[in-house]
Length: 90
Image (cartoon, rainbow, N blue to C red; front, top):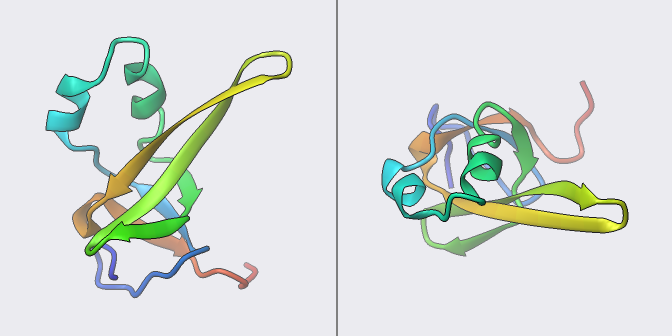
């Protein structure tokens, strides 16, 4: 799969979320919306390619001491850009 700039991406690569589909945002429950919007312009590791042409990333946060929660996105190529290839420093 390639990102918005045509860079090849793989599982474990770091990507920046540049867009989130408005249709998804309109559908989300109010309590999930701020956590999903917080993903914009932030960086995440590609965890998998669940469907052809989609990269999966997850955003985790702490709800309370010892209690975590998460939300995730399936990103299309135009919605993200490569930040760093897996295993490379710098």
